[in-house]
Image 1: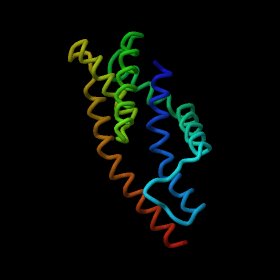
Image 2: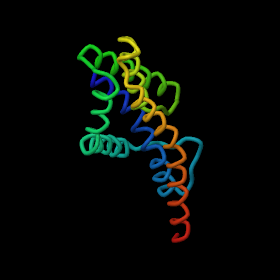
Image 3: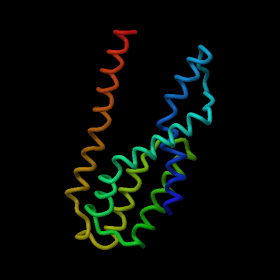
Image 4: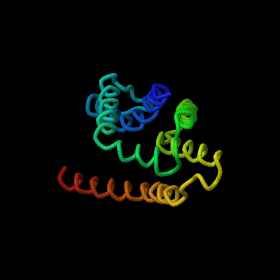
Amino acid sequence: TACYVALAQGANDVANAIGPLAVIYFLVKTGSVGATVPVPVFLLLFGGIGIACGIGMAGHRVMETMGEKITTLSNTRGFCVEFAAATTVLVASKMGLPVSTTHAAVGGVLGVGLARGIEAVNFGIIYKIMLYWVLTVPAAAVTSMVIFKILQFFL
């Protein structure tokens, strides 16, 4: 199932990360942008390498939260989590919906925890994760706006 999740991440997360970069690359190269933009293979490889480096450098904290703090996972439960998350992400990707693999995996962990009984889930961690999901969008928007204004000033 780890390979299945990797496939889903490649189909979704790399596309989410590289999409804006592909538009910039195409604009710089051609001087215009159409309704669709071709994505060079080297940009996809660049995105895949970036995701792999991120997992290697900082992924352990997320893995610890997902694997230990929400509920106790066994091999069977982990299989269910990964299979459900990968399937959800691949279906969403096929529909053109940019979803989060991490969000899908949290849903999978929550699902196997609830299947064991409500007392098996650490809802304190779930609430904290959901709060961070809500705060991430405005935080990224403000950060993007500040960076854009700085670049606009200097360019």
